[in-house]
Length: 89
Length: 419
Image (cartoon, rainbow over all chains, first blue to last red; front, side, top):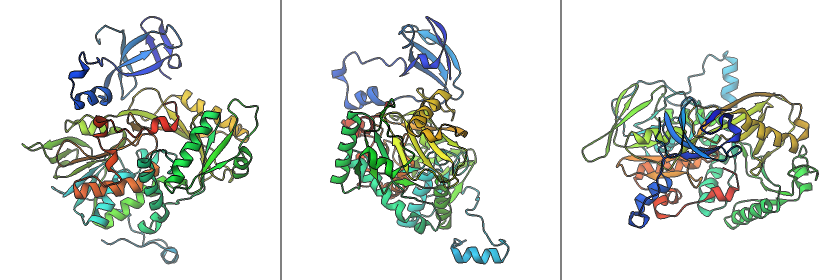
């Protein structure tokens, strides 16, 4: 089980959190202007990297807040977590 | 070198001659500088694709490149369940295509894949479960696929260890049964396809990891860079399961995939006690007994994407708690080992099979948590697709373009699994 550092509450076990997938996916400002390919890319295509991955977590059984984390998907080690709105460390 | 045919007679002959005449099952060739087609990924789907390319399409100058060893990836890590009781017509078509091929696969490959149609029972624990399973049942029967409804008593008669008491957290309200469903020996499937493909001239290149995909001025595939040197080819089929995103990115293609660890475990071996396969999607319990006597138990995926081929213990515990409640006789059984595999999951939980925006590059991925059952069917339609350059009719709905066109095959919702 992962130990995850919530930026608000500190280190907590993984079962207190829910996973939110790839971070920093901004909804297009003008969706109507997108082509079908661009819209599909926004909805469905993901980086799924082998290595560092910026991802969202939510401390759902704690403070309830969303935050972001940088984690290496080849080791599951966290490089760090940071608040929503901040850029990756 | 032709294939050494196996039979009861050859076993008798070999035992009389002290087993000195067995040949290796497939060669260990050096890579040739060029092939007509290269399959990336030496699991069951990839090896099967190479076999059908050679056997049905006359394409024998083919290589399978595998970064590890044959049978070391998800082919050797799954819980070997075979069934075709899916909801949508497109899914039923491809999975039942596979079930029909399982029935004769051992004879076709001259390799005992131990296909055992012992029946797959799916449990309903709530009224909604029952409604959904019955909807699937009727969809199956409308497509000519066998499936039947069992009362709790009938389910218990079919699987005596099942607890149908009403005092448990998720009591059994009924079950569907697909009698043609069952299990097979997963390693034998990979080995059988490898041996059969090799006999037809296919080169199986183990410990050969793809590190780059070279494209010509027109954008088409012209070569693969590998840890065993450059391999020229104009046709590449990527069947790399959890690593499909990684390989396809080398050609600049992003896929609608996320890779998660999926865990499984086996118990200490016991005498035959469990006659069928039982699945409960609602509480994530999948169980059968291997011919060695181990109970083979499948858990759910971990929450986060990862390539580590391991997962957290609380995921296994979640499943074991469900198993212990459904089958109280297993409460004192010890688990022998657990492991993880990396599964590539699409947004609609259906696979992606077909062409890509890159000329000469084809992909067969996204089988997620349930690819083993489809192995022969998937390999068969993907070989057709590779050979002809256009999707096989059964594979056509599973195109990459379905995400753009909004024609999802949403088995995620159909399964009712809390993904």
